[in-house]
Amino acid sequence: MISQRLRASLLAIGTLLLLSACASPHMRDASEPVAAVKPAENAATLVLMRPSMFGGAIQSSVYDITSGKSEFIGIVSAGKKLAYETPGGKRRLMVVGESADFMDADFATDQIYYARIAPRFGMWKARFSLEPVPASSTELEGDLKACTWVENTPASHDWARANLQSVDMKKAEYLADWEKGSDKPFIAQDTGKKTRP
Image 1: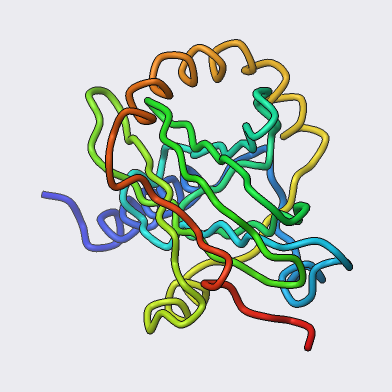
Image 2: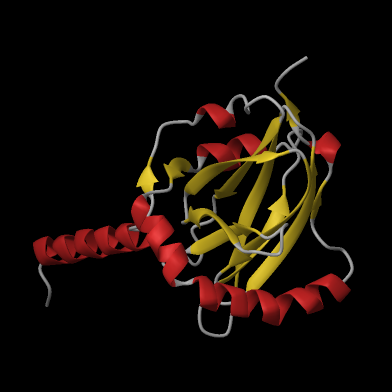
C-alpha cells in the first residue's frame, strides 16, 4: 500500500510534469506588450489566446498566410496569449496542430482584436481552430485573465524555420477544403476595441 507521503509526492511530480508540458520551451513569459494596449500608428493588434487546458501538451503554432507564404506569428500553449501587430486590411491566419485551420480578418487600424485558439479532438493529437471573439463579448475578460503573456525568442524562430516544410504541407492539404466550406470564421472591422478617437 502506498503511503500518504509517497502518494502526495507522486501527485506533485505529476502536476509539475503536466504544467511543464503545457508551456512551449521556445516561447518566453512576458509582461503585457504595448501593442496589446495601443497598436502602433496605422496598425492593428490581434490578441491570440488559448484559455482551454484541453490538449495542453500539444502546441499550437500560428501564421499569417496573407501573402501566400507562411509567416510565423508564434506558438500559443494552453493558458497563454500572444499579441500580433499587423497592418490594417484583409488578412488570412492559420493555426497548426495535427492539422491546419484558418480564419479571415479585416482589421481597422488603431484597434485591438481578439481570437481564441480552440482545441478539438484529432486522430492522434489535438487539432485547433481559430474563433473570433468580439471586444464586446462577455467571455472576453475571463479568457484574457485565464492566460499569461508570451513572446517569441530566437528558439521559436529557429523552430519555425525547421518546421516550415511540414507547416506548408498541412496548409496545402487543408486550405482548399476550408475555402470550399461555408460558415468560415471571420473577424470584421467593427468587432475590435478602438484605441484612438
